[in-house]
Image (cartoon, rainbow, N blue to C red):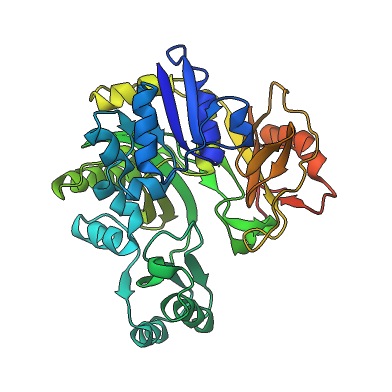
Length: 418
């Protein structure tokens, strides 16, 4: 069969790598892909938001399955368009994807279906938001309601930071329409983890949990990013907590979406926090997480396309997992998550070591060489018997980026000193 992966980041490269291992997949396409993907799939110069062109391409090439990576095309209705054209696409409809597209919708949905999450209120008026912040105190969390490329969440440690955040969103229009409404919620203290699941209607098949590191610098310091690295599974998370999260969060969410007339098919991602009262939801996403996918898929022993066909046929895919751990470290452009320059030459480094792998995110091939083309450039990963072994394996490849003023990475993924 022929498979099309929509997107251009590390998550999509990881999907391409997994699909290439399937005996059932003859050819993998990516639209638009990136420099690393170009070496492992046929890249098509169609942007992820050019939905009509993507539908036309899938028809002409007789694509069997399309897998949608990013959230923007999902919320623009790409799956709806593919289904209307009689094509198979794995991902939620725009109606179901709203669980990621609107924080306000997600919070009201959780409240209705008694899914554990932080207390909150939603505001469009800046003065009302300020009064609420003064009443509640800090730390407190300010979230842009809509999609803000992973940058619309501010954990304010004092009232002044919180007030500045709502002014940036509601007055200065920092995130455009995405920030025209803000959700302000209580700060939850505890260790975070990500739990993804294959979902079809009320059927839920969980993946192993992963943990990513959002802060830019070692020791969980610096600004929030889209994720500077991740690992799976999580040694300090016992199975009873995972089972509780499946029972009280993932399954009620899937059932609730069916009841709302927004039946979900695809990957439901729950960003969770372990509290003294059990796991609670920080956020829902409507697709594979990034960078969690890059450390979860290498441990999945099943054929990905077979899993998708089983799930969408309401058959248990019987997910099986390799022993050991997977740890991935992101190499980012200097200045990320703020402004950074593109087009920086990547150093030469060994990528054919059996115990390491490389996933490209923001790269481009120019005259046969890779240059940077985004904030998060690539991820160096390893599967090993322990997290420490995986980290040490990664260090060998990461040395190529030492003393390079164009790039930076965290040295403590899996072992932050915070």
